[in-house]
Amino acid sequence: LNNLFYNKVNSELKLEWRKSCNASMEKRVWDIMSKDFSLDFDRMINEIVRYDIIGLSVYKSNIETVKKFIRTLKEKNLKIKIVLGGPEIARKHFDLGEKIVEYFDPAVDLLIVGEGENAMLSFVQERSGDEKIVLYDEAPDLAGLAIPDDFDFDINNYPRCNTAALLYSRGCVRQCTFCAERLLYKKVRIHPIKNIIIQIKEYTKRGIKQFVFHDSLINGDFAALEKLCDVIIEEFGQVKWEAQIAIRGDMPEGLFQKIKQ
View 1 (cartoon, rainbow, N blue to C red):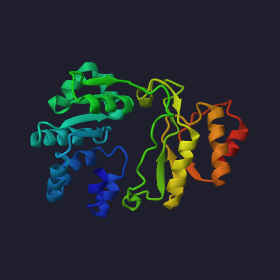
View 2 (view 1 turned 180 degrees about the vertical axis):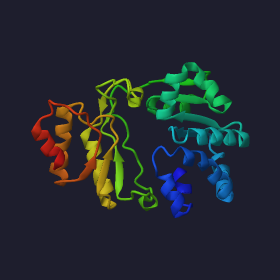
View 3 (view 1 turned 120 degrees about the horizontal axis):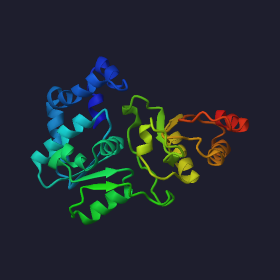
View 4 (view 1 turned 90 degrees about the horizontal axis):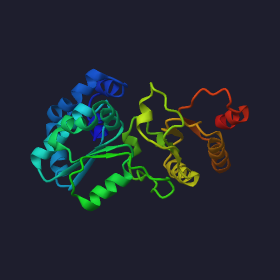
């Protein structure tokens, strides 16, 4: 939905929209959607309120827009169930504890802190209970999870249409006090490499040439990273990619060479 309205604004606003931590623009998004494109906005709301359950990812950049959005949905359909997750829910829970429920008011039916697969599945199956918050209901491993299916998205609608997002691991081997990502997961787990390869193959078929790994830390486990590099080199020869690493004096020089390749 963010991307839907991004594509409707002029080039000057697009530039502002893409700036990270652009607080003034973040405050304007709701008015841009609801006032500047009121017909599209009303059409979107009327379509969404027909669903039973709505799930939204909350970030620092969209939290105020989300709050207004979910109140609008509830005003249109009191029976609709709204579930919020994402990084900002974890951070808000860290700051507010149980008071996070009051912060989002009665418009929210469930807040998920941490990953959402187990919590969302339980909510969809039961649709009852008084529990308003689920805390870190993490899968013991990631092998059984489905591969993210966004292969029918029109990638040309996105600013970096030649780039795709991947996730090799969840969690971090470090718990740095200054880092907000330490709040996202409790345990470190790694996706099967075969799933990463399947995704890269599907994306390359669509002309995507670059990949961004959104892991908190890609080099927490040298052996796992080297194995990932080996399989990518074997399957593709070379791909362009980026990821976050920690500066580590014990990182083998040979691993740097494989990363570069």
